[in-house]
Image 1: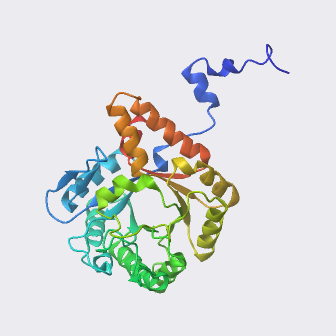
Image 2: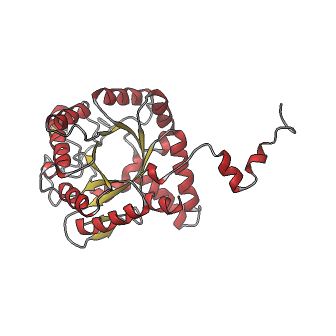
Image 3: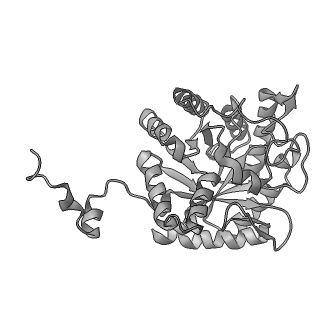
Length: 322
C-alpha cells in the first residue's frame, strides 16, 4: 500500500506530532563536558580555536563545575596542562599534579558531579607523544607502567572514572590490574578504544599544548580508512576489563559507532571533538549556518548512530536547550 493512502507527512505536521513519533531521544543525561585545568589562580584563558572554552586554574574550574552541575550535566572530563614537562611526563602521575589537585578540589566543592580523568601523556611530555620514547618511537610496554601509575594516582585523588586515551596495546588490562590491586575495584574504565589518527584534533592540541614535537601519532592511533580494525580494538578492550568503550572522533566515524553498538552489549561513548566543534563555531560566526540548529543536528546524529554517551564542548549549550 502506498500513496495516496499512505502519506508520510501526516506525522510531521506540527511539533507535538513530531515529538510523539520521534525515534531518537537526546538527554542531558547523555552528556560529558570536557574541561582544561592549569596551574595558577584566577586564570581563565579563552582558547582561540575553541570559542567559549577556557584553560582554567583550579579555583575557576570549581566555578565552572558548579555551573555544569546546575545545568544537570552529570559529568565532566578533565584534561591537565602541567606547570612543567619532561621526557617521561612525570607530573601526570604525581600526587601534586594538576589533575590530582583539581580532582580533590572539585570533589570537595562540587559534590555529586562525576569526575572523569583523561589518562595519557601527550600533555605532560616535552616531546608531545603519548608515552616513553625509545629509539625514536613510543615504547608500548614501558608506557603501560606509567599509564597504570597515572590512573592509580587519579583514582587515589578521587576520580570517579578514568579514561585512557593513549592507544597503547594492553593499557586497559594494566590499568584494571593496578586499580583492582589497590582497592579501586569500583572505579570504571572508559577506554578510548577506537581512536583514529584524525586531523580533527587540531584545536585540542592548541588547548592542551600537546602537539608532537616530531613525527605523528599514526603508529599508535588508528588509520581513518579502517573499520574492521576498530571492532578488534573494542573487543580487546572489553576482554581487558573496559566498562565503557569510546569512538573518537564522532562525526566522520558514525558508521563505527553504529557497528560497535550493534556488535557489543556495552555502553558506547563518542567524542564530538574539538575540530568538529570549531568548524561549526566558525561557520556560525560567519553567518553561513545556524550554529544552534547544526549543533543539535550533530548531537542527534551521534545518538542516532548508537552512542549512549557524548563527550562534547557543546554540552552546556545543549543542556540549556534540552
